[in-house]
Amino acid sequence: MNEQQATGYSTLQISLHWLIAALVAFQLIFGEGMTNVRDAAEEGATPSSVDFAVSIGHYWFGIAILLLVLVRLGVRLAHGVPPRPVATPTWMDWAAKLVHWAFYLMLFAMPVLGLLTVYVSDSFGDIHKLGKPVFIVLIAIHVLAALFHQFIKRDGTLRRMLVPAR
Ligand code: HEM
Image (cartoon, rainbow, N blue to C red; front, side, top):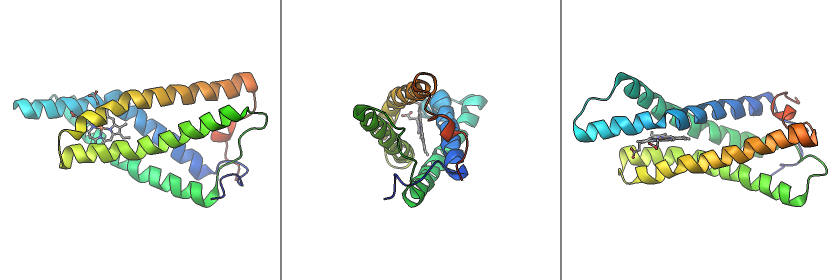
């Protein structure tokens, strides 16, 4: 794996990052629509049309996330990622690595758990729902770290996820 060889993120890597981020935001903000539709079905009630529309989005956006994250991992393995900014303490390097790989794990596990809930057993739904707070904590750490790099260290880390290097 040539993770340290790239000089910056490519247009494809940046596009995938922001597209996946937008889709995950939709899933986290509107995920309860899917829960409402399933609860309504269990009770023999009719879900609201908004919940119904949101649940269709939840299904297909979730599958899109799974496919896009596999593409993203493939691109990462093939083209690498830029090195960490210089003068970052070792513990921060490790924390960044940990959070990034936790994201990949969650981006893979959440859609799979969602599919298992729909096609195998409702009991996977409880584990799937637990992913929501985990995602929120990861996103909070990730955003705070980006702001720290942008406004305190001023080392261009956020910029390289906005402007392609090649
Ligand atoms: C990264 C992708 C995904 C995220 C972040 C996500 C997130 C969520 C969230 C936040 C909820 C609402 C939890 C609550 O009510 O508190 C939910 C519910 C649900 N999601 Fe997802 N989801 C994803 C992918 C999927 C996929 C691909 C499917 C199925 C194809 C799916 C099926 C479901 C189902 C069935 C529920 C209701 C669970 C229940 O009522 O027990 N999800 N999801």
